[in-house]
Image 1 (cartoon, rainbow, N blue to C red):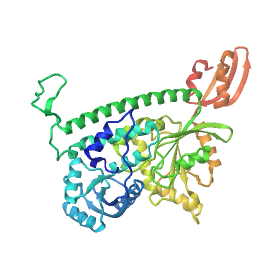
Image 2: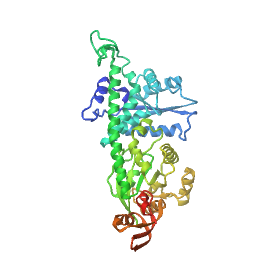
Image 3: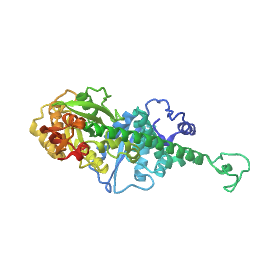
Image 4: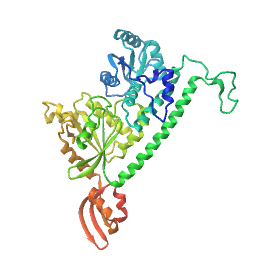
Length: 458
């Protein structure tokens, strides 16, 4: 279950040969004892210390159902080509693994296929990297058809370059008899195709199928977004580090019942709910997948359709768990990820969550924390769990959305009273007058709706 890169031949084939596009998930095994290994690399620019990153890796391992029995790290100038860490440290890891009785070693960085193979030979146990661990957690928590497709695509893209290690001990042929070479019968490769090549071809076919399915999902999402734009209901997306309390905030504002647990990636699939804000303003509030440092590139690519919800939003709510000891690093990771997604300039409100846990902390001290973290000074402090500050947050959302409106003066003919009604529901009217040619309106309208009124601009 845990090691994509350690599946048996039967598991690999069963994963590939599915029916009606449904994944075959293996049974959850007992908790495996895991040893964590990290590296603080001087050539890698990171605000995270090795100790803090390993503590987060321990939470990931616990979420995956593993029992962490120890950790070790090394400071290096740059990764070693053979083992990622130095050969001397590998011997230390081997000794510690035996002392702890660990049956699995997890590295806090992504390893190359060769590095994983070399480490397994040296340590004599299975080796996982951070990417494989996160992929496994996502596979456990994906509930919707789209989520499962996305996770499976990411898993196969991760698995493909690592297939050789699966079959390094098997050189048997996939056919019998004296077949032909590439110049033989059309459509038959003959006995020259090894089991490795068969698996690679099967995975390539599966990846192509998954991409087709996700392309259909993308088209349906695009149609939904176009209809949503036509309705004029603003979209607000919740973004933030995993376990910052985004789902709890969604539940508190909308009355939804999205799963909330005190663990990393408790919810994976995006959820959208309609919310009524002060002044009878309506928005669509979307909870997106949480970010994390060293987010696997396979996941960013596979979750393209989901992450597009962030790009299409009118406003982002950046939720920060102010009580976390690494809150500053969390905020920086989210901002960096948003920048990589090309949405760093989108209108954003920063929401400091879980303030109910800051017992005895004065408002001035909170302001000092905000400055130290490099966050905007106009943050909103809330407790999604207890409902504190939600009215103020709603008012701030309304204000921020109104600032994203455009001022227009239009003359709408009476046969288009549907547009007048739309303006009343979604815009702000400063002046309205009925004249012979139609309804004269002056006010503000959401930027996304402005094109519908362009031909009637007075």
